[in-house]
Image (cartoon, rainbow over all chains, first blue to last red; front, side, top):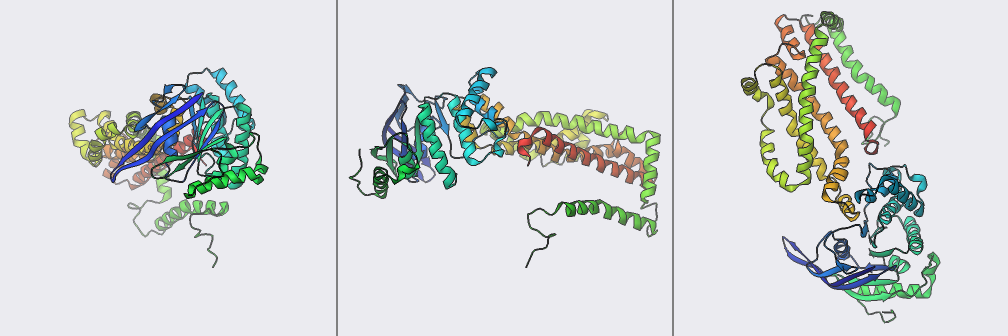
Length: 257
Length: 263
């Protein structure tokens, strides 16, 4: 898998004139990488992810996955939204099967795949439950299982833990890291939470706002099997503070980039 | 100051209290009626007692009118409303889902729905005669537009993220329409029907008051001719009970088929 974004810009035309949301974006994600883009609101990070997903079209520039230009949404770029997007009338099992059903996979194979990925996210017990019976964190885990079941080349995540409380969020971050270590899925995630980005990813694109541009690409020099104790690590804190400084508009010489 | 239980704002009250109040809701008006009738304050030709109404009901039953008229009215409502439902579901969903269809149909529906359906009765009689057709057409016309607009509104509330998720799972527009939008609005459709079937129940009586050979509306007109107010009361009660039963059965349908949308 090779995701490449070249000279991307996105302009929105509103009644008050046009707004440049993203300008001159160049980035890439390789097979098995966990990459984050961090930025404040107004940095166009959600727009960026929507463009990669094919839900919006760029004004200029190009996005390719394995050399193929993105022209619209597709199951090769599965997306996890911040809001809960489970189909409320379907059981958890049916939700996980639904992507495969849309793609024309037969019922038996669908069931097996869904059961496998429900096991991966640890929700086998809840296969027959309705989404409304699940907590917020569980809903997102089902959404992740549903996306993984479609075997995407890359999983796109739009602040997936933004609506969760602090404790659940930390649990989900650990869950996400373990899941990534186990499955080797490539991930591009956007977040405003610098701590979350450093904890999860190997590379971080730092975006500045108005228009959204990439200010810096930061390499996170930490082992891949992390847990919450790594937050006490000097290297973790230096990276986090460095990125915070960048977002505050200061230079950050300490960063590896 | 502690707010009293009765005036709890937007909150539940204890179950026994709610049951007691619901019983009072029926019992008090009934008791008042009984009282006023038994005190002979009003001539019983104008206000028959509950007993007289019960006897009138019995009479209508043994004469066969009760079953015949009720069946005739229910038949008209069922056919007229079923046709309206059949037409309004696809059009309502299409209008909600496609801005183009909305632009095409919303203005004309917006105007026509404000034309009172009973005003069409003379035309319907001219076009369709005096049989079942004009009555069914009246019920159809009186409910189809409200059904359409309410279903259209429900579709607008389908979360955009749900549709976008469908696309990123590899879904096509057609699949999004039939496998996401449509099931999402099923509870709203049932609710829409529950609300609008009340209108059709009024319209069938209006149609029968004007011209009919049978039906509960016709029975009321005949009772008026012979000054049988007890029969009028009997018919009104039947109308109320059947309407309430329809309401309850649609609620039951919702509970049975849309567990996910019911608390």
